[in-house]
Length: 213
Image 1: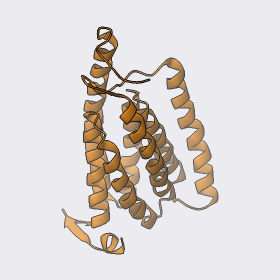
Image 2 (image 1 turned 90 degrees about the horizontal axis):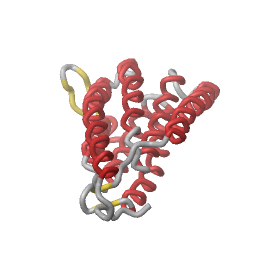
Image 3 (image 1 turned 180 degrees about the vertical axis):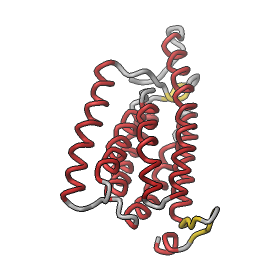
């Protein structure tokens, strides 16, 4: 891993480590795969977490580094959950979240961000504890909702992207910032695709889908 962190390429005058380059490419691939509701989403995510953990740890972004560990655990859950929610017509069965689920997502984001920011600040684990914490918690909320097949997870990712771009730029991780911008475009398309599929599943005749609960 040291080789990947300390060696890299220069793009448009900005040096990018191989670890950051490969990790962010894998992360982009995850969004692309998630749009298509394929189980390959999760093993590719595992590869991204390993690489980006080392990148963020070296950049003294404790929240972003710690979230990779949590993402790894959620990826295992997502892999298991998606394997149970497959459908021969629609792929992974997706749906819009209920009001209670949406409120729970908002509450988890607000409370979790506050708690994580205070921890990062107390431990001096991040030079930007609040945005660092918001990205950490938002990522967990998004992946948990993704694993449950909720369309709203894409909207959580938009919030994470909006916070992440300026933080990455301020950290000197210019390639990662550019990737976050690309993420935003993919996220908008993903939300549209999942929302359309959720409507199709909801209006399909009885007996068409075979997904387990």
